[in-house]
Image 1 (cartoon, helix red, strand yellow):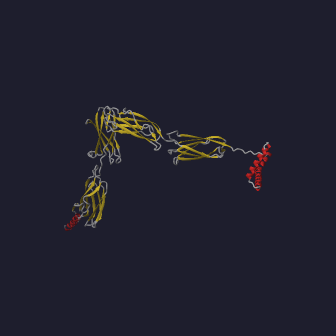
Image 2: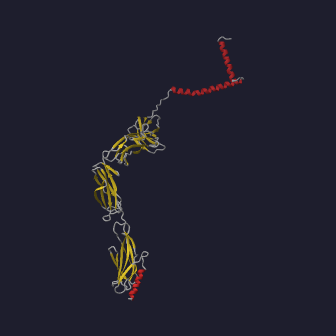
Image 3: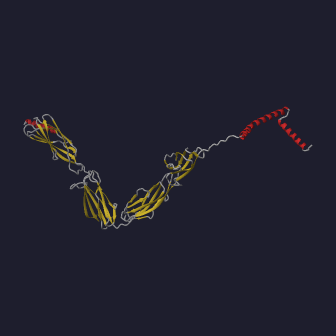
Length: 535
């Protein structure tokens, strides 16, 4: 008894020294058999926290005064049991294991308690056990997304004719991808008259699930459709695992909307300005609906672009403008049309406005330079170099075709490397045969606007052979003429010498040459007077 008592005191001391959370201790008991009972030296914290689906490590330290092998039984409190055995346990023995808890579904994040019972059996009837609490946070199961409901015809407060088929389009999703139960409740003037049930299978987490139904409302009245969605079976199908949304359908004798008689275009005669490259046009239409239906305007701009759809919220006796803007970059004639409807078949109204778009874009110009070896004509086989300089005021690329007029291949170019709105093209050509040719140059910037943008230049070219040089033998007259021509300088020199000698002789007589010429003139006049019978 003293040994047992001593052992019991050691055992109780071991338990007392093992604590879990603050102010919390393990609970233990034993059954006495033969010999000394085993001892818990260390037990798990009480309580032990964990998460669903996450393994938790548990550690104990045990000893046996009689050095027995100890059978350790783990009763996890969730219906599962594990066992293991220690070596002879007179020495201090650690036992480490782990366990994973899976609480029930549809948790809200709160903990679920499990009682962990760890027992030690030395095989001699001595059984010691320790009880502790394990708290596992149940996984938070989020509620499904509130259903999004629309109907065909569209609108939040639907106005349809009696007997029209109405398609109720509903979708939802569940964060965990749970299967969903759908309940449709139909009421008229506050009184429920029908219920429908549907089911959609589990999906990927967050995947959108659609569940659509069609109904016919035969009588005039205000109908309410409530859609309930739950991701939990009974009895868990309560809030927050049951969400709902409703939509109101007004069954009346619907009337068509009204529109203005014209589509207004501002400006009415748009011009694409070359300095900016576009023109902004505003199109406006006024519309209203006595039933307060949503109005849908579908615009077609007759330029190959997709239609533009606009929706104006409902409301009775309210004028609603539809305004769209369009940037025009190219000229042309456009039939801009719009169709307005309240989504009731046969209630479509269509209008059209004719728009002519002009432009201030100017055509390119050409400066042409070339040289012919013979001046006014070129020789057969001669390579003629042509330099074409194109100038476009807006810097648009220029498309060029060149026909040399001799049945050779027509050349074409697309010139895009504009520098200060100019681009240069250099080409060459040779003509094999003599003749007159017309070289034709077509060019355009592929735009429309001011003047004609399709331009043509004709160049007349003459291809000829060089003139022949003809030689003739000299006659006696050629030689005589040459001799006489060569004697002229000699005669001039002789005459100059004679004049110099005469001037010198006159000066030796004491007269100047001019005095001599004057005296000679007077003597000649006297002599002439005497011959004529004068004094």
